[in-house]
Image 1: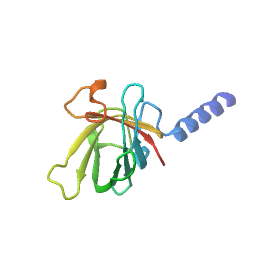
Image 2 (image 1 turned 45 degrees about the horizontal axis):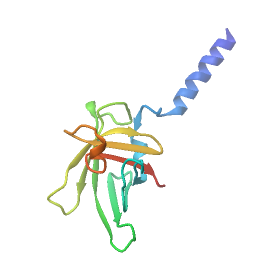
Image 3 (image 1 turned 90 degrees about the vertical axis):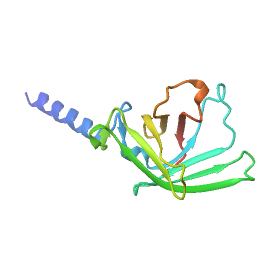
Image 4 (image 1 turned 180 degrees about the vertical axis):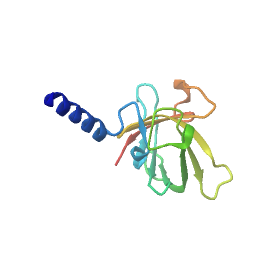
Length: 145
């Protein structure tokens, strides 16, 4: 009986420490810098596009052409939302809305279809996935730092 209770306690501790599983999306995973990245055999993404998200719900977006001769950084706010507005751990229908500062053309909203500690993918609200929309409606990122 003692073995069973020790095993049960160990399993509970492991589950508690594991936090987010691969299928879950955790708000804390979004913090940091993400570079847009795709399978190069299917989509040639030239240039650099990096989002940096902080825990104050602000982001910066750095863009550069391939040779670095044209660089730009913009900032803005982001809002994460899910059904029931519970975002500590969630598994479905999570959106991110990007509000670029000093822009009339802001409020781009995406469904977060994947968010792990090293990979993230978004699908623009109201669109469906297809390889032909990579870089516009479908966005894929890998963690830079």
